[in-house]
Amino acid sequence: MRNFCKECGKAVSETMRFCKHCGTEITRNVPKNEAPLQKTETHAENNKNNTQNQIQTRKTNKGKKVLSKKQKIMTGLFGLLLLGGLGFVIWGNYYYSEANTVKRFRDAFVEGEAGTLQKMVTVQGNTISKEEAEAITHLLTEDDDYDFEFIKDKNPEKLFEELPVFKVAASNKKALLFFDQYEIEAEPQYVSIYSDVQGVETTFNEKEFPMLEEARSYTEYGPLAPGVYEAKSAYQTDFGKVDNRKTVVLLSSENEYESEVEVSEVTLSVSKLYELPYDSIQFMINEEKVDIDMEDDDVTVGPLPLDGSMELTGVAKTGWGEVNIGPIALTESYQDVEMDLLNDQLKEAMSQLILSFSEDYVEALAQQDASAIENISGALQETLDYDLFSYTDGNGFSGSLDEVGISFTDMIEVEDNVYEIPVQIKMTGTYDKDGDPEEIKKDAVFQLQYNKNNGEWNVFYFNESYYTTGSNLEFYEVSGEEHQGVTADDSDEEADSEEEELAEIEVLVENYVYDLVDAINAGDYSLVEGNIAPGSDFDTMQKDLVARLYDAGLTQEVLSAAVVDMTEIDSGEWEVTTNETIVLNYSSGETETEDYQWVYTIELTEDGYKITNLE
Image 1 (tube, rainbow, N blue to C red):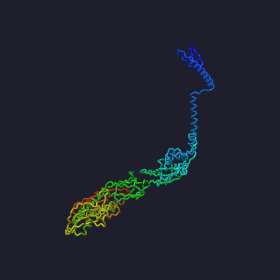
Image 2 (cartoon, rainbow, N blue to C red; image 1 turned 135 degrees about the horizontal axis):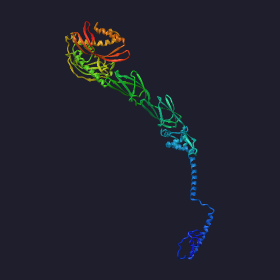
Image 3 (cartoon, helix red, strand yellow; image 1 turned 180 degrees about the vertical axis):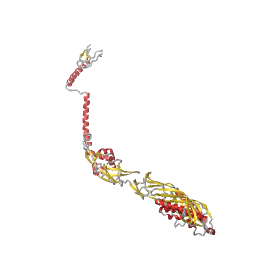
Image 4 (cartoon, rainbow, N blue to C red; image 1 turned 120 degrees about the horizontal axis):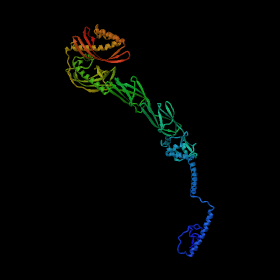
């Protein structure tokens, strides 16, 4: 059975896999039944037509080269690149054009895009900083009075009319290595910051800019881009850093502003209220120690900030404890500093001394005897005996002490370490045994002496006939004890009583102490010889002492002298013990303070009591 190609209808052998006439694959599955004749003829006709078409196709293909798949892809890519490159050139020429550069600058300015402005704006050919770009954006937000037309009209070109510190200019750099481009040139800004002190440093928007010139009264900075800056001026002092911030607008080439940093040297005028003594004193400004020479009337410190942040304090060490001074806010270039060393502790010590004296004083008025007043010198007791009782009729005061007012604010220094204080003594009573009690006010004055060596106070002087009342009396409570006054008695007129004798001896010794110092300082023995028994060994010894110490250039000063004991060892002979504090001033300039305890021998002579020996 013969086989035929289904495509071209020509006979093929059974062993062929492809038709040798048309190349069609031969199907081996041949139906058992023979196909109808009409179908065979139609099929043969189709095969004939197909064969002719294939022959024609082969002829055509012989004249045209077929592209591979890779070649087709490459061809497509090339076309796309060509179109993309053309579009890129068109975009670049537009984007970097002068007109679009102006528009981009305007848009970035209005929208406050500091990053874009930083890339576009230059000052003297250099790209501006982030801080400068932010300053440009602040031109729109600093003041409501800014009303730029180029924003309303959306006309970028008007920007340069309203802000002539900016202009567009061709850049000498290529954009993307290919395109000509433009940039916004900003007029360089220079600003002088004036200050009262040299050394004030200023930053703008927290950035340091070049310092062109530093003069005594100003510092010039620049160049900066135009804009609105926060200028922070700072000055470093020995006591801390002070700064001031202010908004500055830079829209002209030269700008001037005051730093307004409140810094200045401060002159301290230090004075002591009451001139009270102290051992040492340390001043501090904000806990930083400051050395101040108290011998100078005015002391200059600083420079310091005068914004109230600096406070002057001090600690004075005194015999009655530490006294705090201040705090005093330093806000002026001239500052008065008053040292008030009269603290509560000192007031307590002084007031107790005055109150104790006042209680004894009323007792003395009642007894008509100054010896009732304790803890005073014999010399003061003798003075009080004369002052208080010379003009009385001998009748004592009957009544009580009501209260005592002390005016510390009127205290003054009358001599070294001696302070006078007005006091008012209020009593109720009478000097007439048959009279009715009445209120009595006595304006008196106390003089209190301070002993630097032991830190104690004593009554140096008292006068009950003071001419004025203290301006600010502080009243203190007292015991209110009732006293019964003595009456006049002829027996009181007996002379040479033991009390008078003791007072005379005590005055003699105290006068000797002070007179001896005067004699040594003056080189004049006559100033003291009246207290010494003439012709005695003690007389010769003291005459030699005065001459020797004067020649050595030694001077002395009595700080205190008090009789502490008196003992009669024989009729008309006494031993008197004293405690003395003497300052020794050597010719070398060295000074010493010495405490002495002496035992004097006092004998009654034809000229009265005299000193005959000293141990």
